[in-house]
Length: 106
Image 1 (cartoon, rainbow, N blue to C red):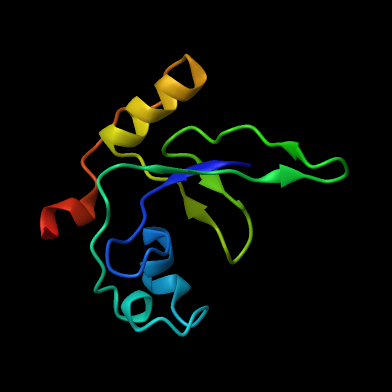
Image 2: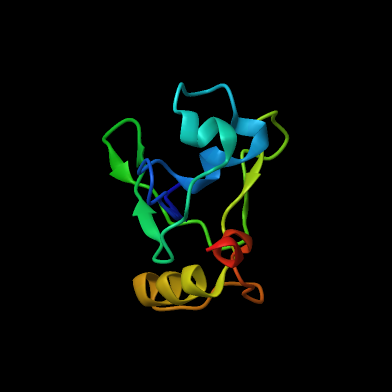
């Protein structure tokens, strides 16, 4: 499923990789220390289904991804992600937006 995520202004990786549970999946010092700064504007990360490489639908903000696995994550639920989701899909997300916690660090 495609997802909205924020990119790090320091290393350009997804800010979700900076989560403590994701450490060790990359040799990026920024990611492994959670020292990055998120870009306030979300980026659409598109994924494609096999066979045929069809574009997969976009997860709504705040949705659980990979439920029931050790890689379970929740997509960002910030106001900017809700606005971008609504613009891209012509609809609204299913939960109340909140401020992205990393933006307070900037």
